[in-house]
Image (cartoon, rainbow, N blue to C red; front, side):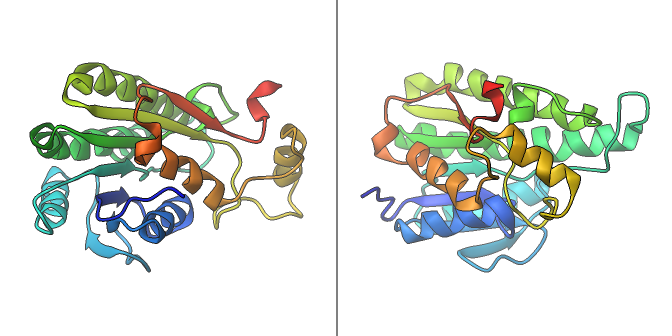
Length: 236
């Protein structure tokens, strides 16, 4: 059984959906979880933080570190997904918000936790990308671009800090049944099911189990990896 007993963990965007499932799985595994979000979180210790604000991020990391002086695990899950758009239609504001939350937010948190992880000679950073980080989707120029960027960011962090026993990995979820996902009577849902070789969409906890593995000692020789959890979508 995987355990994170006593590990100090930060999960961004942990109030709902995949982030909430990850937070709950980490708590169940024994971690002390600090959830950084702009909305109240139902599990773990909640710190209100806009991940695009460097000041908010510093405060959130300080709150987590105040528990026992360590930061063992960081899961950068927060992301911004705006209305459907193409490169022609996407506004500058859409691009800027997507970049500021999804990619720069991950950078803000990573920068703040690295000194703790370097001092303690270990840590695990998990970035939640998407299958749109390795492929493309319709009407999603900004989101697809920053999710690609997040994988490059993950690899760079893994490369630069591996000598400090700090691991960085990315997870690429496919279609997952969350509050913002299409309902079963919508054509987009039927398309998602048809694209999966398992003929269904995923559950948030199925992404949480992947994050749990990457956070744990069981993945101690895994870094710079991109773990695809998509029901076989990208096989097609």
